[in-house]
Length: 360
Image (cartoon, rainbow, N blue to C red; front, side, top):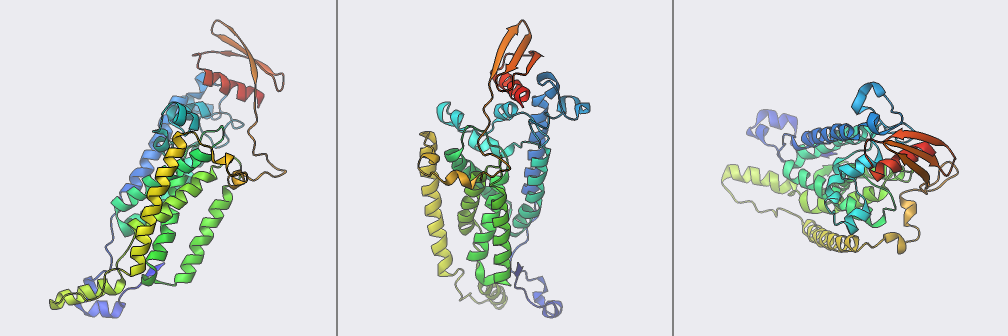
């Protein structure tokens, strides 16, 4: 996407050489968000402490920072119980234990090295460019609110699993890029090529979300939130108004062109109303424990489409346990396998984690 600009020849031979239609900002909020996400992952791995809680660990030479077995977490990361402890999105705790803070905390957590690297690389390529164009306040708000909106929609459809990651906020940035292109249509060259490229990128990313263990509802919620926010936060004045203002200021005259197109104001008002209504209704439904799956029989296909290669239903595992002092003998009901463990604590979630490992 290329903004229109004055020709290089004219710029080199006139006072307009210093004229830039739109200010370029120094990006710092996006790099800071990347650092915070990486630090949170390191803290999560420290809390996870695989050697003390699991029978085996991957990359055990890392000691306390070693990963859960690959069969349990192929993304090279912590256990589900650790993510839950750190603030993963779990609808039961949001609704029944009034832990609404999980709608924010979960967007700063990641399921593994692969997960955090993929999201942070995307954030660097997308977020830094947007921050340079629109500044840290607008893009910081866009990122945070989109992540929150992603978790609100996810909470309405999440079924017996936890959800973590910044991908909802990232989809918010993609959505904002699309609405920014539409609302600032007149200042772009190669409009159709830019629009088709962006739509293709968005569709490919949403298509990936139908794979198992990917929370596509968070992607969709983040995209919708970011798309609407783009009309509100990323509106630009007409290029002609900016150029005319510059020239007439040099001559001591007032600008006569209007700053924005009427359609920009209409989109801003409609988007603001839809955002307000969406967040209000969504939060009320979430805190009442309403499940969107009860009213939409096909919506679950948006986040996981079953094939002969995989199943979308989580496998239920059950174990029989016998505790003798600090020793715990577990027997997997599904497979009949047994194993003796040394208990560091009697945390029930850790016992369930050990049961999942044993049955796997």
